[in-house]
Image 1 (tube, helix red, strand yellow):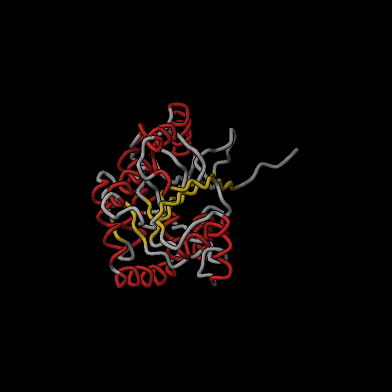
Image 2: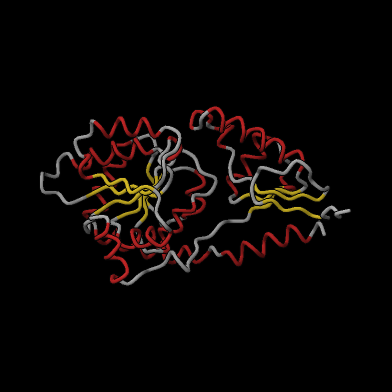
Length: 293
């Protein structure tokens, strides 16, 4: 007979059918419960079911942020002593400052100039991409025909991409928006290195890892003003309401005209990202597991 494990660790909230007594799982966020309109019905039901089962079966829960911990305590009434916060980290072997001879071939391949805002993430409702496009339109409307700024969007299609596509069909600045689809981490890192700013207007996140990846590449950061981003990014970002495209447009104007601000955000980001490492995450995870062995 195959001996059942004494301890099972699953780094996602979908547990297998059979679990031992000592089971530890990771719950990244509870968007399905908090903002169900951001997901399709099938995904929402699957995540709700998986999360409830994980809470019921797991002896310990790991989550990436204090925000997610408080969401679990407040919404699902999970005892706080059963939840352990283990922040994520950027892979700094890939996401780092790069020499221009490594960056320029990527920009040339995609015909991208030297002035662009960069978004990386699934093109979906949760990421608030239509608001970002609207903000870019407002930013461009009084800059004249020769304005070089572009919006570069990297990521596969997700729930709500049809709304984005319909909006883009009628956008007056469509020719200045590049949709690159999914790209490798190496390409993304190169794009982050030369971005005027990295823009991340999500409605909801459990952590927001692309923020850290952008910081590690030296990109000035503009991100949505939501609790997990405040927690993770500290003072190394411009925070903008996800509800207000006008505020995003204003922030874009500010960061393009203020070189000192760009340099300050880049410097703070490169320093701030050092607080997060996968070695630390591994050590913290082991400490949780060790208490059950």
